[in-house]
Length: 583
Image (cartoon, helix red, strand yellow):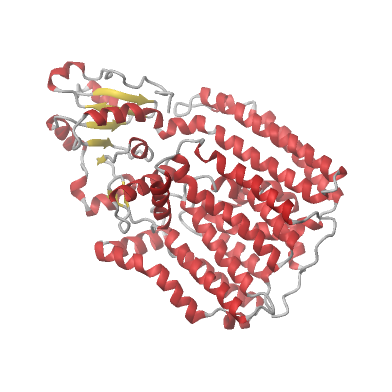
């Protein structure tokens, strides 16, 4: 498995330049977009509250206990806020670091287990696939989980290389066990169940029983529980309700029942993978065929079989779940990238030319389709936003098309050959995703509510510290982070139902009760959906608007002498539509 085409200009300088270029594109844009609901705002706010309260054991969201997920990413984000301040790029830094590290890890593993060319090309495939690239720039849990699961897989592959000294086998297997524990601390039992099931299935498929002798089970299990157990023990001691909710409701019922209201057909993840690996689809089938022809290692271990079982089982596992989100199958991306990276160095110039030409045509067709984006507007996202975003999409497609043409030229004329052409084509898709993703902030700015934050924070600053801030009938996932303030849930707990069930004194269960509190409060703020605000206005509920946009109205309880101004905007309040353009 160490044969490498001689026409590849692989050297440390080339690899270093590729890594530096990727780092520049990967990390610089992190703060160019507002946080999106729900995941980005939720996990940023949880970390902000953890950092400010100093409670590193009991996670809270909007002031309520929140036990849906373990705390590893919240810890990491809270530490980032402590070191670099609270902000958007800081909230995405852990996700970006794990995504970037995943690319480097795959390159290292491919080079050690197969050959240098496989490592470089697999890293290029992973970094430039929209699935991995885009998920690496959103503050969600799945990228962190995917990295630790990737490390679990890669450490196993590295440990099973033939003729490896016993000490190195043990070291890599300890890394494998430790990364499984960190995967559990990232998102729960899937960090253990999925790798464990893959191991059993691989053993049955490959009939490689000797593998179990090299897993260092006793030392590995001790390390695993030493890392994974302490938090679960501590949080249960402080919160007796934790274990039932976390394991029964969130881990098992979430998978086995449709309670989470995230349905999807069994084939839900098929288009996700197809779009997620779109730049490399034309060679995917050939890549799998090539991988299947590779022999086992002298010790009987088959890394290819392990990769295929890993990808197939995890894909089918989440396809069978009653709860589906786009990011759930992200852990299979490194395995697929490694399979493609094994074949790419062997592609002939003629085949690569056909590949690149096909994608150049695709980009032209996509650009024509983008011209019709102005027909997609609705009340929630006005046509003007799509027209503004169309400029970014066309720019992204234009850059990708130019780089694809450059890749065609390099494939034909450059000494860099397939490496130069592949890296340039990968850069086309990387930059296309970066430009289009950055431009999406024309929607993200509105959905985040961030433009309203200055007016709201000014109101909070001039009111007493104990002034209640109500969230009436809706949970806004981003505004608490931007205004540096939690809100009291009213009537509809949304995903905070567990939190309000164990701390019922912290919320207002009915709308009528809230009206009574509002009337009794001397000072108060509230976030209200526009439709409900209109009804309240018609009922002459005393309110003074301090900020608003098409999705939310922020009101203040007017003082007794100002009751006649109910519904009027306070001085300096944000104007209707998209308020306060300076953020």
